[in-house]
Figure 1 (cartoon, rainbow, N blue to C red):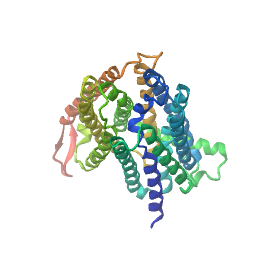
Figure 2 (figure 1 turned 45 degrees about the vertical axis):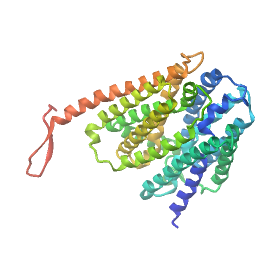
Figure 3 (figure 1 turned 60 degrees about the vertical axis):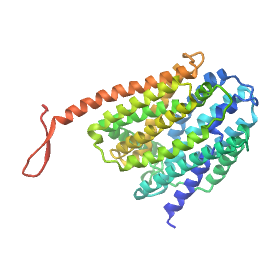
Figure 4 (figure 1 turned 135 degrees about the vertical axis):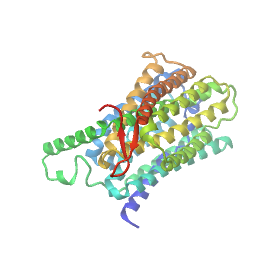
Length: 431
């Protein structure tokens, strides 16, 4: 077996184990249960927002040091933070423990940047597409299996919500042990490149930041990269907000103690989202001209779905609309990622998508502060929050539909004309 394939398989197993957290779809139900001394307001309006803010702060720090540390130490940190997180979830019962837990959760999520960057430092560029598909597939397989396992054991009463956490703890512990077997990275793109190995620290640092600046300017002075990145960041923000507060909304809608199917829903959305992403990879479409309008239309549908979900009294309608919402997101985020990636330098993938994620988390923090945080914003109940999230997606749709209509009109004014050298496109607009 070739070396790049071995490394890909090692990382895939880590990713699968990391995502095997069957307790996560039932996280809120566990927190409001009898084993915890917590109120719903404490969970929703104080603890949940802290997780968002912690994620933003930790991402800034880890994003800056991932290249310096050469990835592997931060992958181990990812696993260790998962062990601490689920240990706290199992063995702490008061509000102080929950606040510490949410802070660690932000670190856990932010550390994932090292996982997604590691593979590109260990394999040649010719294998990027293959290893990306491998690691993405491992993540989706872990999430899907996690949802299935969680749903089966809850529906059959084999385990309760608390006992599910032991499976999650065991899985992230196994992932952490496995992380120690990942090959170390001898070089990285910015601070440990071949050219900078013999340079003094000051010159090495200067060269690294100069290269980052070059990659940043080259990417975001391209208007196509800029517009797709803006949608990527805004839409990811909206998706994360909808996903984060969905379990409290389920609890609000559900009026009795009937069975819930959160795990099954997560498994379905993962599988169908994966299929939607595959379809996006094969779809032939003029994204240059019609991309903005398509983004606007998809955001419009997503906004309408979220608004309906905020008002429904039917849990299964909420499940169904959330699945459709997620499929639309996975489809278009794949398109957006591909449109960005094909216009930037391969070496700058981690930097550009890291910046996009940072912008997304900034908007997440703003939304969380205004909508959900006690003492800062309106601290709305779940239904009120989802009205805002629906309006947020509708606002995105208006902006991109306006841009899309303008682009389509301009595109129609550009027509092919005959030429001795073949077909060329000539604009009739004044230059």
